[in-house]
Length: 194
Image (cartoon, rainbow, N blue to C red; front, top):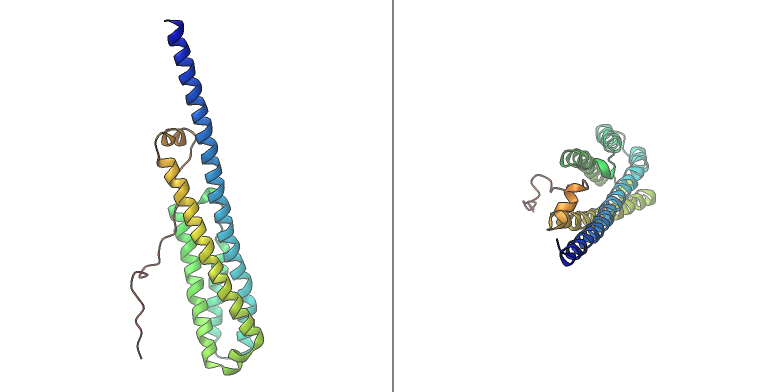
C-alpha cells in the first residue's frame, strides 16, 4: 500500500466519522424536539382535565337530574388521566390507547355542555361561562400542540429514513415515532338538519 492510498483512506474514515457524529447529533436534537412537543400535548390535556371538576360542580349546582351525564364525565376524566405516556413509551398502540381515552373524555364533555342548553340560569352563570371559555381555549391549545407534535414527528421520521442517516439511525437505535390518527368517521362531514 502506498502512502498516498493510506492518506486517502484516513481522510475518508475521518470524514465518515465526522458525518456520523453530525447525523447523530442532529437526530438527538430532532428526538428531543419530538419529546418536548409530546410534553406540551400532555400539558394541555392535563389543563383540560384540571378544568373539568370545576365545570362538573358548576353544572351539578344547577341540574338535579343530570347525574348520569355528570358521572360519565367524571369517569371519562379519571380514565383519561390514568393513562400517561412518556415520550419513550410512544408507540402506535400506546398512542391509540391514550387517544381513545382522550376522545371518550371529549365526547363526555360535549354531552355535559349540551346539558347546559336545558338550564337557562346555568347558561347565564358567570362561573360556567368562564369555565366554558377556558375549556374552549384549552381545546384550541390541544389542537395547536398536537399539530406541533405532528410536525416534529414528521421531521424526525423523515430524517431517520434518509440516506445515509438511516444507516446511523439504525446503529444508534433511533426508531420511528407514531403520529396521531383521525377519529373513526372524521372523514364524513356532519349532517346538518333544519
